[in-house]
Image (tube, rainbow, N blue to C red; front, side):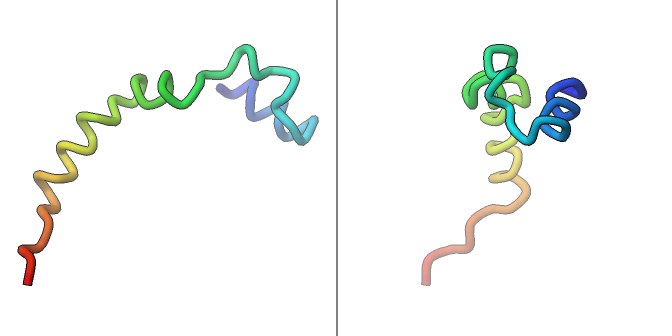
Amino acid sequence: MKDAFAHLQKEGSTVAIRDRMADVKEYFDAVDLDRYLELEKEIFPSAPPK
């Protein structure tokens, strides 16, 4: 990841390294987004409807 940021800073674009970058689904899987969203619902439940 550090090399991707270094490339972006130097070149101003990630076009040349896109093949080494994760897509959105891979990123969400890596950070376990579904679990985070469930945890967020537990911590911050929705207000009851008025």
